[in-house]
Image 1: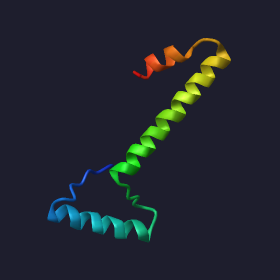
Image 2: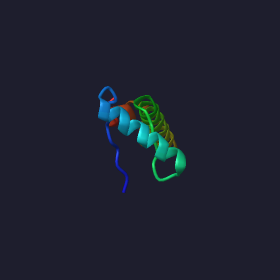
Image 3: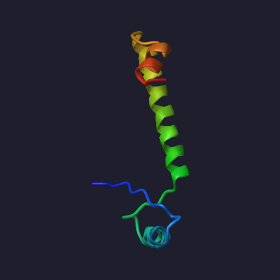
Image 4: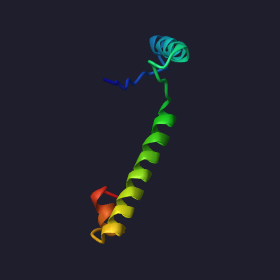
Length: 75
């Protein structure tokens, strides 16, 4: 199971926890440390890939078009 934790690094404890996590993430693969910017970029990339796959599948099957895919994704 994986967990995503939001830490406010403007507080003393938040800063300490971020530093601990950075150290632990460098020691092994068990902890992956990412900033909000990293996560936003990753989400955007996954959305783009999903949209591309849906468009390609729709074009191949002849069932969906770009407007239907965008509507399904809420875009």
